[in-house]
Image 1 (cartoon, rainbow, N blue to C red):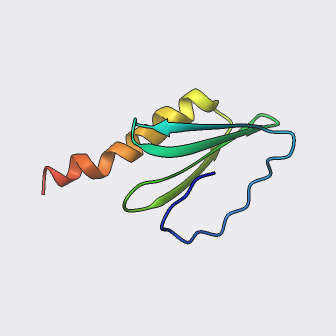
Image 2: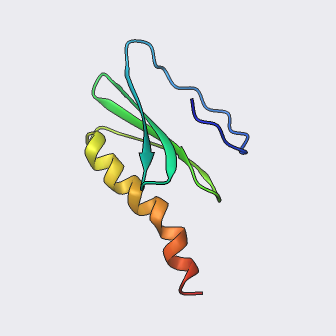
Image 3: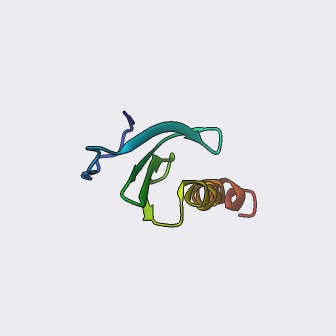
Length: 79
């Protein structure tokens, strides 16, 4: 189960779902929940907590999530 310093109230229906824990972008603990054609990703970075849901498939949502997770560190170098 994901642990973070953020207080976030979120409830995911994981009954009869495929739940996978993994590392997003190689550094953030993340979880995907797949149920009835829908995929939900949950992860936290140092700055924010994220919950993303869609029907595009797990691999596509992970690509989108990785681009979001990488964005703060890329911006830091430009400031």
